[in-house]
Image (cartoon, rainbow, N blue to C red; front, side, top):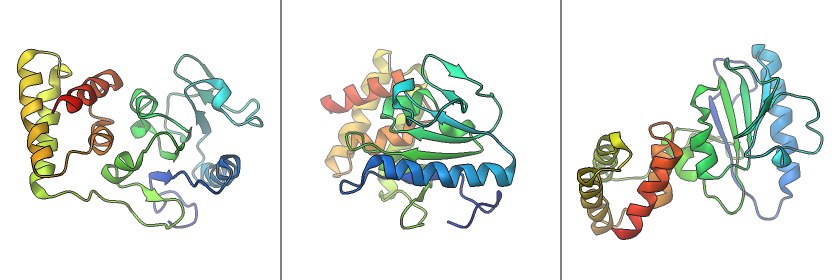
Length: 202
């Protein structure tokens, strides 16, 4: 990761959960960097959370957006700080529309699959993350994505998705969390939840 400077700064930054550090301290570091970046590129900083209670106590009157409300949050590109989202939250409030997005992970929700498939930069190591899948697994992911054009709702979609999910299991690469991360930005959070239910049956 380079210093804040717009074009050279990564679009997605993954801030993984660290069990021996207070998550408030991780949030403070992230907000400081996001604020500096926003000043450089002249975009607002917006806090994104499932509920307002998940925003830091000192967020104050700065713009924010939750699943049900927002305050001073523009619809244009911004520097977004996603505070401890679940996979559902991340899919429902897709960071793909952000100019830059910092994703703060909470211990109960592994967002590393999203980070790998969206080539996010690791906040601590500064490495760009990439998928660690075989070519066959990637092909199966792509097939499941295409099958999901009706949110895996109809009988044909379920049947074909289960076929591919079982093949992923056979080759030892069925990782529901990783697959869900791949689908963020491609399908709604309700569709992804349906896919995860199908994965339990594979």
